[in-house]
Image (cartoon, rainbow, N blue to C red):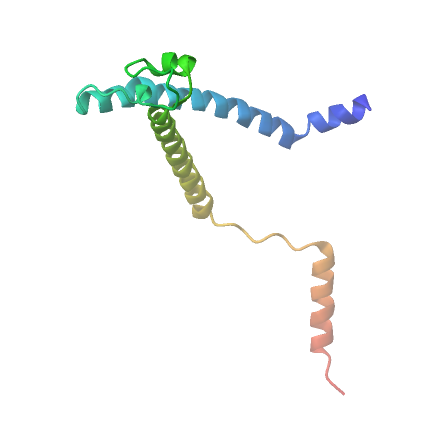
Length: 139
């Protein structure tokens, strides 16, 4: 059973998937940092100092207005739409980058003309038989 598991775990697809997940997680952290540390502060500066991450609606009477979002979450139920906007912007960036990567990969694959596959030995023999039968006069 250990040998069977080892052959499963070392298959190309499983290893490729694991590498993709690790790279995807790292890429997600990079995009999260770009959104929260670069894009949202610029948006906040342009809009007069707005910080989207602290926008929320209190759903509980225990939550006082004016608290930071994290403190408001500790105090009671809140609807954190500002954090949602930040995460949504991160998702849009990731989706756009992946779209551009797939578009570039598709362009690279389409630009290379694919040669037709070589005929197998069986196909060559069948072609020769067909040609011999076609060359015989019909009776």
